[in-house]
Length: 495
Image (cartoon, rainbow, N blue to C red; front, side):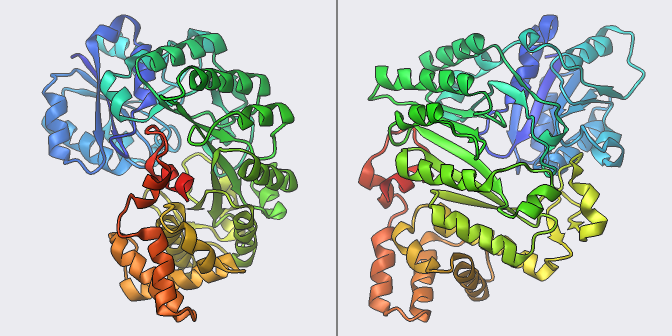
């Protein structure tokens, strides 16, 4: 193949939507172009060998915050052993601050921003002349109707074994300074009928799990309702072969019409990712986040109590202007709303985001290496931030996993943040580890912690045993949810 499109995905299950968009829009060059995905952790030599086995003239790499370090090694090796191959970079990690990045220095060309039009044009000039003189090419944003849809490029293997990412729109109208979408002017929708036709074709081919990457699924309620109706129709027509859809939801915008649609979905068919990030109005204002906290809390409570949707709600620690007490209050408030999962994230400095403007005033100290995690702020010192990092990890293992559904309430008590922080500090002191803790050992540690808090050993072991029962998949078996439901959600359904 003359042109290779490649990236290192975080997991095998993640199929690159961006590369498929590029391939779909290669025009006359599409027959000379092929896609080659790898997974982070793969040996650099093996990646390079497999790429060069295709005898490419051009390799385009999708660069993201999670793969830039390993991709840099791949590009460096390619330039050593095959300097005649032209390397073109694209993706969010290299679209901003390119002058500071080693991978950009090593590469021949860089496309920033939208690549659907600019990358094929650049490849044509590299292959047929005139040779491009500039290294950096700003991506041209075409009319949405002119962008070819990529969904036919999902293979049968992708459909059978991987998450299928789809998008009904690009961009975001909100300006949250910790997010790259803050740089967008608005959200641009694809033609809805065309998009739904693509989904219909995917469904006919066997696709059952759809993850929408839209930043604001419920921005246009009429569009949201039509997309939801598509899935409701599939559920009605095939109740024994259900679909599963994941959407990112704006938390304070849930009108009655949308609630009526959400109510119709059965358990195991719908997941919402909801970004709260902070409940502190002063912090929200500081990072340009517009959010009606009362309405957001009301909507989360409604979704938990009145719908079957699975809720994954995000909080971010380390935002400028937020101290531990403020974060704890927000965390406790969110726990009281009882979402299925609370994603406790630590602030990261994505290249190009406006959050950097607060660095001096609020003492923001970021790790210089990807993923550029916040290390300290004026209000949270380094040691405390590391405690928060460990809290987040143990929270994922114990709370979000769904494996300790009965035990969790006892762990949290009346002061969820303070109590779980105490547990986090204790378990780290006992294990000196946040990873590679076997489930059986974790269950024993949870029981031992409850015992230190005054519970009788037999009661603690019985409580943990009611969740754990000696097997990783035991809770999921209780409810026998649809096969299309991700395993972790299945445990929450069974709880």
